Length: 218
Ligand code: DX5
Ligand code: ZN
Image (cartoon, rainbow, N blue to C red):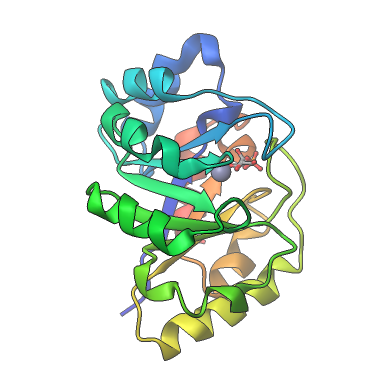
């Protein structure tokens, strides 16, 4: 059976003054999840938004909220993000000395648990934690900003992770985050990814819904 390709538009590049329009657009498009990027100005050199905004997005969104925490000590806030409406909670490997505990906590709160890897972090480090991981977010740019260029080495990481998941007979999804375009989506999917995060490609498009559909069909 062909693998289903999911698209998760990142609201980071949407017009924040028109957030409800961006939410409606994603709701009525073929997109699968909302990707929400939380940044603390410490783990990454940028600050975005937090629980209050996510709670407002939740009142209007009709698709799962895929919350990507680019923050230090994410375990301190897991419960608050659950309460604000997160369906998936992704923490960074590099921010979690007690990752096993963090993933158990996230699953215990009823969310899907994700781990994100920065571009320099090898996928082999996930071998002993894959069984607790619903989503692996491979960062294909350095986290902190939208509209950056895809780092080509990510394709090798996708292939390696895909083989690890296959060997472990796991259902973990590979999500690619950063610099996804209509031009590179085909090779990203071909390497084994199932979830495409796309910010700039979707929100700067003349027809965002058609762009989402094209990404899914690539
Ligand atoms: C980057 C974020 C990404 C970003 C993707 O730190 O994690 O989710 O919004 O944006 P594009 O698709 O514009 O690279
Ligand atoms: Zn992200």
